Amino acid sequence: MKPQPPIAPRTERGVVLGVDVGGTKIAVGPVDRAGVRPAAPLVDPTQTEDAGSFLAGLEATLRRALEEFSPFGPRAIGLACAGTVDVGRGVVVASPNLPLVEVPVAGAVREALGIPVTLENDANAAVLGEAVAGAATGLRQVVMLTLGTGVGGGLLLDGRIYHGAHGAAGELGHMVVEKDGLRCHCGGRGCLEMYTSGPALARYGAARSGDSQQDPDGALRDLERRGALTGEAVGRLARRGHPGALAAVRELADWLAVGLVSITNAFDPEMIVVGGGVVGLGETLLAPARDQVRESAMAPGKDRVQIAAARLGNTAGMIGAALVAWEALGHGGA
Ligand SMILES: [Zn+2]
Image 1: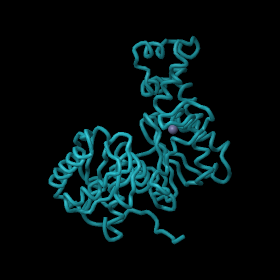
Image 2 (image 1 turned 135 degrees about the vertical axis):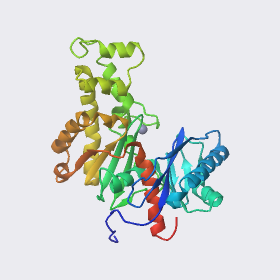
Image 3 (image 1 turned 90 degrees about the vertical axis):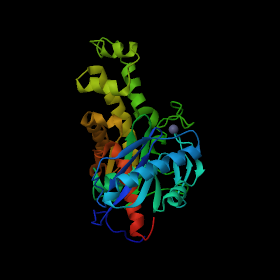
Image 4 (image 1 turned 30 degrees about the vertical axis):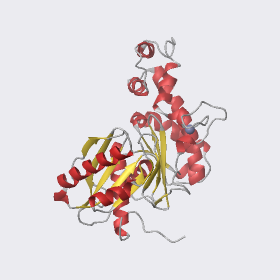
């Protein structure tokens, strides 16, 4: 394999507009070559009726952004979307929350706006963002696991985003961790997502609601009665030291460790970055999971792999999307 240069912040003038295209909103912000954002992003709602209205809405938002951020000198646009993306063709093949099937989004925007455009999957963009400007700065072997409503993943191998044969690699939330386990949204059973997502944390909390030992003040039961027993609510109780909520977090940490051990054994990464809303629990979640990796993964990875919370939060996709476009500019075109 051809040796790749290390990922390091470089100094080039101007900015690229990083665009996080979500199912409800589009966030666009200027990002410099080092992954730094010199201004707050512009945010618009996503048009999701059909592909035509989606593209028209995206173009209108980007025209506004090019105007607003023109003092920074935008040189290209980097898009990140949820779903399966054919990076080479700039096509969204399929998306869980956008009305796009085989839509050449990058080409359409490039043609409409006359500026270089790249397209990447949002989780892949996020791992690049964390490796240039976040928790894994300067590292080349990085796996990202995002724990939210669902569980996503991204792979940075030898300093490059790994896409797989069809652009769909890195779906770490759908590694099967229990044969004949819980039915997953993907159609499979026993996926990691069903045991380490926000809804899973809510489920672990509900299982302890009303227990005299684990829910002595009835806080879990009250939340359940009000229909407010979410993963976030369990997390808030855990931070206050509630025994049942802490036990629920510990159960999630046990399952997270199952995923982290497999990832460590499969990829031998320098770091696994854990992101998404659930990681707001911080070391309460990560410390026990890390202990189990030290105990159960294979050497030398088990002692060497770093397991860290993401640093860029919900800006990782935007920053990473821009960095993809910066890379393309460096190679003579986006
Ligand atoms: Zn699944």
